[in-house]
Length: 411
Image 1 (cartoon, rainbow, N blue to C red):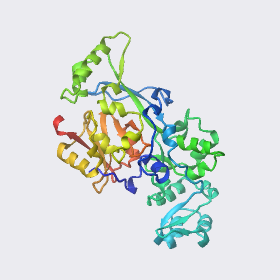
Image 2: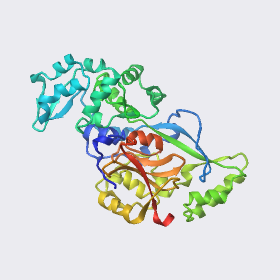
Image 3: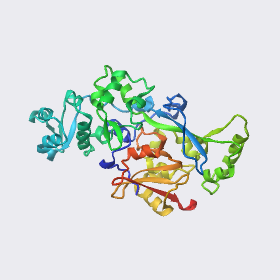
Image 4: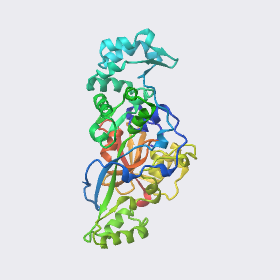
């Protein structure tokens, strides 16, 4: 059931947003909500796409990218531009054989494992590969070596890499103003992790910057995360009663608020859709497309995915849901396991083979979910497709699985 810790086997969610720029505390000084980037100013990555029709009606959407605002990025110190790989201290004798076994060229391994270049600090041993050696790695070898490094959470950029959910660096970087030489480097050093295309060589990338401002610009761009803007298509032929039944969970939740709006849209000439954000509960509607600020840190911890999914229908969030044990208890007492087809508000949990829930998100319609991927200031509240979340959290037939839970009141 819910857990605030994310194991190495599920090192997703740009996940923990670069582990908060390489290991920063999760509670930081933030800016004001007014600093949150306006959604309409973010670049659209493609035209309108259609969901499968269902009891939710006819839903279409477009993708766009969010980037962490300046006030958030400014709170995080820039990482070192020297690449450092970290191993447990008791692995020193095996570092060379492990890297060679993963496909690292013998000459490169010999250079980085010379006794004078291996630094020990008691718990860990550090080696420093040359950037030239990293640039020469074929994608398959890079994937093998970096998978080895990702087993140790201390290798923060391998444990939690940058994800390109569209499977293309070009699409991810479109309209981002990222310099061409930086995009070329990112593309050349990207590799496959499971079903996702990812990037880990952030120190190398920052070494291309000529100024601190350029380095911060690059780091801000690396927070780019794909989300979507959905809308409900409406016409006089739609059955408003059926739509209201779905979007009020069958219990009439907020029906008095929704019904006049839907009927007005249907009757208004020239208007054929309603942004789906208007059908979300008040708290979720307020949080969507925003980043946590200092007001969210007043409880001692920033909100995570489980706090988000369990507070989905709340008008005022319940702070006790920040506690993993109490969140688990809430699910066990108030929810029941259900099969597809899912309903509006159902909680989809991404569960490891050992039974630990590493993520949760709220189902909206078709394959669209309301999610927060991480408990730090770099992780916004957003809407994502289930397929993208499957990539982030490593869903597979023998790995992480998805289970759905529905509040007993709506069952």
